Length: 421
Ligand code: PMP
Image (cartoon, rainbow, N blue to C red; front, side, top):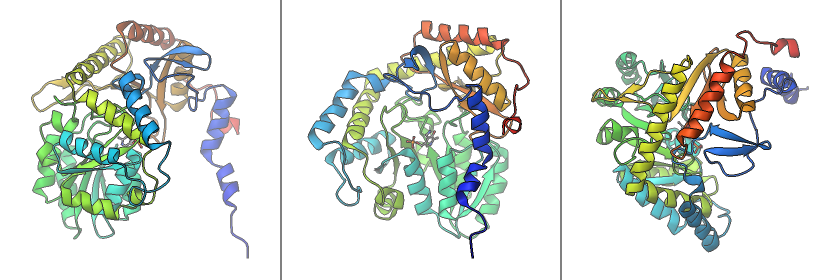
């Protein structure tokens, strides 16, 4: 007997491949464009300088000489790789130092460093939650959280993005499921750049006996007086049980962490498969994260954060003035408005987003495009993001390009995926 289908044939017939081929025919593929130098505010890409509005290098520290030196020193001292798990032969004093510093920064008892932020989410959520437990998550949560939920095989009770008015009901039902309950939200949502109302969410989680975990990937190094993230900005640090973060954004490196109570972190250290069954983050990555963290926690860090937030407000206002649909700023509990460094432009149609992306690219501006499944169908975004190291001249150059392409791109798509198959 033969298998009913051939898996390679199924892959070859996938809708995403057809879309990619159609986009390629028109040179409209926004993905895998190669950087030919450092990931600064202006980059060299495919032979041309472009203003980089698609980076998560919020503080611009990937090119900082002190961060590079810290990476080089770690590389020289410990070599290129660790060839093993943190659990066995892959733990360096640098990993421990970073964990201690992260715990102190987060105001938590302990922290655990993973090889990627993705793994930190998977390794925390899928270890704490099992069949019989319930996870309550926002529908806009990052893919790594959703994958972690699936891996845990716990019951999933999602609520519509930021509809905290629905959360009490969801938590009521979750409490009746009979197991433990974990609420997981992004502090700053990765595509929309908006904030989760952590004051209300933490109150509701506590009232229903649920544990709360916040993904601070886009919050650390950007929000709060000490740059400790959205939890700090909302003054809910003590009401949040676990805080996850990544080194792949403000911390100018690669890797991730979770911070929380010492005994829970200890449990993850000996039980988390995504921690134990993968090689430790390489020395240079840990060295760079330590170097970046030193700067972020110094007075200079505050200046960089002020600069990136001022740049975000400037770009947000500029795009709105040009008639682009940008999100409303988020609100903090004291009523103040906050524009995070992620400033999405709502486009809607995938093809129009690809056309706008290409027109901007040709005009010397790189932005990220978020298409389905990164965002719901029909909600394509141009996801722009700013860095502390963008000057006003860079942002004005980008805004001038947005103005030029605004009317040059038709509303209706020139081709469809179906017509190109
Ligand atoms: N959480 C969020 C909200 C993210 O945006 C990302 C990365 N885009 C991750 C987790 C995963 O982090 P990493 O890149 O370190 O794997």
